[in-house]
Image (tube, rainbow, N blue to C red):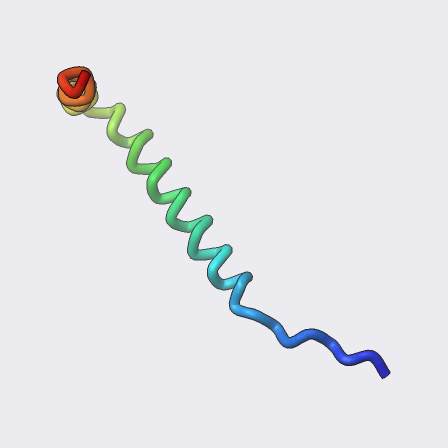
Amino acid sequence: MAETAPRSRLPWRLWILRLLVVAVLLLVFLAYLLPEMVVDLGNRLWSCF
């Protein structure tokens, strides 16, 4: 009989990574509801150059 490979924790890590990506994207999209914040972040980013 062929032995099956032990299940790794990769699926859990993959789900956590996906959840973090979705949370970051949600925060970015919600930030556009506050135009003042977007302008402020743009000004801060521009001042770095």
